[in-house]
Image 1 (cartoon, rainbow, N blue to C red):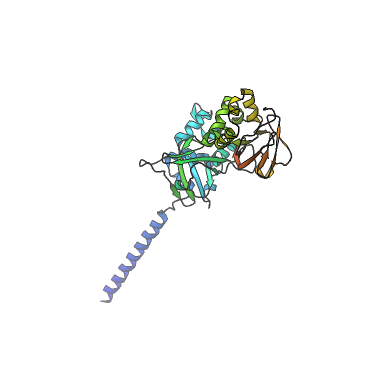
Image 2: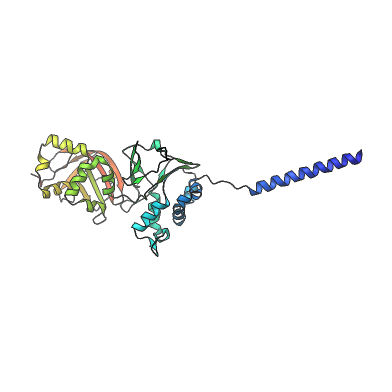
Length: 328
């Protein structure tokens, strides 16, 4: 009887040890899943170039951090199109490793927003702040213009958030934020980019195009620029107050009016607008007190939105058209 009991005890010990060893082996074989933005992107084969880019720019660790962040993640196809279009190729093939690190860093940061913003939180016809800096300002990060309608989400007028087959925006939830995949790499926006993307400035863009000034506001020659931009409502107000005046101007006069709204060689944020007369590209000046501009015709114009940052300058929105003395 004692021998039988000993055998049962020995058998129980062996079974216990076997289960313990199997449990240990199972624990050893388990790996912790990285649910951060970087981890999720790394597990998505369609985002492999993004991961390469993040690693090259030393941003992969940042997007593994606490955050939260919202990342608009370009697909491999989007990156390949961008790389080819900008000449970042090796032996004819797109190559992320040929992009200068400094430029790549800002391009990537231009796809990142602080906070976890799902598609429903992307407000239609609004500007949001990315983490990128252009050449115009060392402190005011770049803006991104958002259109969010039933047709989908479009960023800066060029990049679409990719949707599911059901047509709903695809929010990829990470432990430290949200990923939205996009179909186009979002380059650093110029003043032209932000003005064209926003239908609120369609009248201004049409006039700038007619005057041949769009390339100026799309480039770096003479930049940075500070633009006091009349929106469509401002032009309507001006026309109501001055019927037929705008349409009666010669092309040279239209150009004078438009350049009177632009300050060259300075990225003047709202907190740094001087109280002394401000010289413009038109060669005239205007003065600012608080949120009110006084033009050379002594008319008072209100500043209604400020500090919309582009890579080559900043936009402040005004509620009427400024007039220089060169206009009769």
